[in-house]
Length: 126
Image (cartoon, rainbow, N blue to C red; front, top):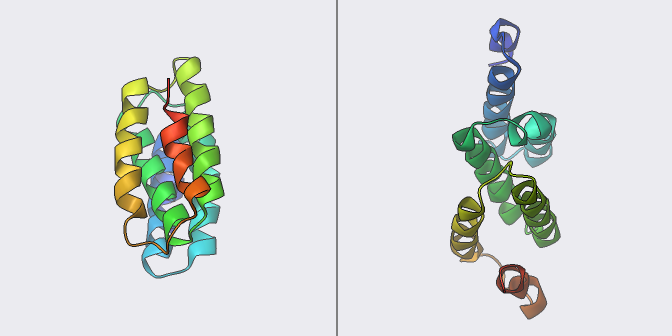
């Protein structure tokens, strides 16, 4: 995958390849390396027009946060996504889809304190 990076002419294509490298590190349990690659691609992907690529990055990042029980980072990511909704760079409907998927991601994690879990509910409250 590293050899493919110089062959990717478009910035978004490079970001997707970099994201996949991060996924490989995630799969082998090298979470700090995975986070490094996810962080490297964040801006390019979240500001792109590709909803599919945005969702891929978000899912990868959320999987890592949940694996490491980094609930505070999940909350920060949702706040950032909400700001992208506000500037029409991210569809609100996808934000609600992510909420549903978050409930599923939390299953099986070590028990969360009520205040950690409630942010999802409160985040979407009218």
